[in-house]
Figure 1 (cartoon, rainbow, N blue to C red):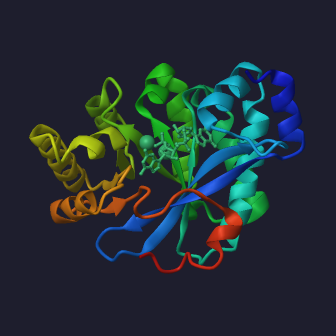
Figure 2: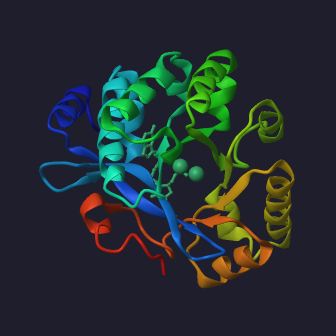
Amino acid sequence: IRVEADLRAAIRKAEIVPYYQPLVDLKTNKIIGFEALARWKTASGEFIPPNEFIPVAEEAGLIVELTDQLLRRACTDALSWPSELVLSFNLSPIQLSDRLLGLRILKILGDVGLPAHRVELEVTESAIIQDAVTARIVLDDLVNAGVRIALDDFGTGYSSLSQLSNYRFDKIKIDRSFVASFETNDKQDKVIKAIIALGAGLGVTITAEGIEEESQLQRLQDLGCDIGQGYLLGRPAPAEMLAADHVSAR
Ligand code: G
Ligand code: G
Ligand code: MN
Ligand code: NA
């Protein structure tokens, strides 16, 4: 069990760093960017996953500091990538109830010198429902500056469809639970097909997450899914590992 003190020390020592997982254009097979995924590597070499430390950071009031550090690091890394590649960064529900979040993020982009259009922020449906008024203020600040917004884990929340008509998302990320079961479940296949059609109708880019099998990739390509992500296309890797091969995908 991690205590606040461990986390505080980890932040001070910058032991929590972004890993990067490729986002691949399923029509061209080219990498179009990377999703930053936080990883805490302790001094003993143990990895603690974000699902464990993000909630602790939120409760301990350390999430602002941690996010600022991670985003600054990720933006700095992204500056060394080819300029067409985007950085996708996750925000948790609690963060969207902080009305200064948008301005703080824009300040970091400005400090680092990463253009806003190269940044995409992933938010979930529950994040928006929790405090809709504040979430809109934050998202508007960001969108007006040119940052793009992706609706993450789509299909697992409560009111996906109403969120889609309330906000203009640039991207929808189909939760990996759909991709995991769609070959063996004909209804899931139809659901994915319908989400792709919805995206086409709304002019929203569709990403499928959790692609692990060649057959899943093939089916998503046949259905016309725009972007893919998953272990088959690339696992999350530290910044140093990308340098050599991030220009061409597979
Ligand atoms: O990388 P992994 O699949 O273990 O991520 C687990 C969860 O942690 C995912 O929901 C992901 O969105 C979230 N997550 C990963 N990195 C960050 C981060 O930097 N900030 C926030 N708020 N959530 C993150
Ligand atoms: O909630 P969010 O979509 O941000 O979470 C992303 C999580 O999914 C990360 O923890 C990442 O490590 C994980 N992930 C990425 N690709 C795959 C995959 O192909 N299979 C599985 N099981 N997890 C994946
Ligand atoms: Mn995500
Ligand atoms: Na997701």
